[in-house]
Image: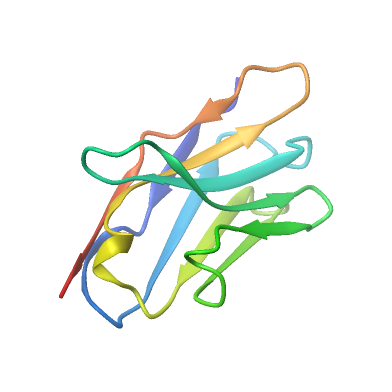
Length: 116
């Protein structure tokens, strides 16, 4: 069972940047898809970005051009670089891992707060 631990959240002013990191307890090489999701207060969890095992990426329209997802199979990490942050980016950011045949893996989340 893979354990995912997020880090890098914090308080930042609008227009600022943050880099989130997700560390896995074992190799992520076999995880077909990894991604970042977020949940704002009172709202449903939503996709931010995903990356496949071969590096194919997908982004929510709301973050395209501002966020970059990357994975390092050697370090067992997935990172999310977020630039030009907006107050609406505020929320708890969760790391997700998907491996065929396994239940979906989630981290416990890291809080991002963007002040206006």
